[in-house]
Length: 347
Image 1 (cartoon, one colour):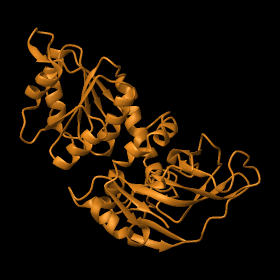
Image 2 (cartoon, one colour; image 1 turned 30 degrees about the vertical axis):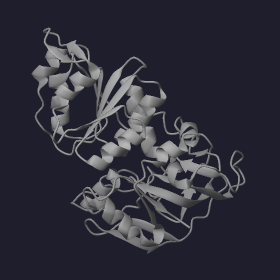
Image 3 (cartoon, one colour; image 1 turned 90 degrees about the vertical axis):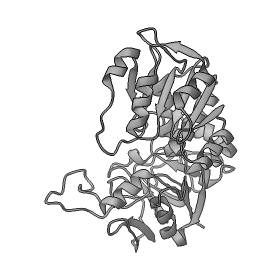
Image 4 (cartoon, one colour; image 1 turned 30 degrees about the horizontal axis):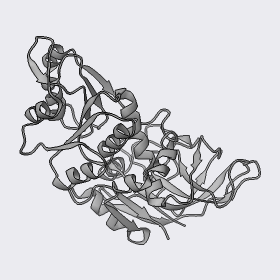
């Protein structure tokens, strides 16, 4: 079978490897779609990973070629004799963190950007989740990033009466918008600098958008969310929750300087390098800063709702690229502004 792994810096390799043979407790999934995300791009920029499949540092500047793909969806084609809750033909999404050999596509021995994926110790609800056959595989492949978004929203503790601003209209930010609106949050605004992303934000349910490249974000938030006060009594937007899905220091500082008393900042984006932030501004609002990493419990919490709202989630996919031109899929991902969410499809 064919498998995609890291090659030279910013390049992938498509290699032929043996098709896995499932053991008694395993299952084999034929991959039908697999998304590409910023983590894949990070590994490509590095040219591999400095750890072995067990998570141990290689040392001496060495890098290991890494099987890619941690957003797979597919169809069960074989099950081991001990597997009782899965059957051939089931459509499934995968928990990348459920493999004993390491996180699938993120340092482990297995990668989901391949024609077949071995599911070790296959258990429905733990390593995979079954979803209705009616859900397109491309949409099913959004399960993992939407779990990231769901954890962010869970960490925000947003309720129906809250007013929220999401900075960054990439897949994670837009996923947060969908989850916020599905839980009945009163008003969700989205800020970004790319017009097409803002259009998508409105399409998936945002109440308002802000082009932060040309609009005054605090002024717009005052218009949208009304007036609140910080701890010193100074007027501030009535925004309750700020979500950083952009990964830029200016977003953090905007939230800190704009926040009313008791506002909350949830940080789900990866910041690639340290940057100065205005701690004094945090004191003036008594802002709570919450970090959101991964999906401790959400990986299959999201699956039924993705199935129920498949058409809405499908709007997040900007490009569907066949596996036989997978190099093009990664080129799009590595080119700033060329694509929003790329999903590779397998015939």
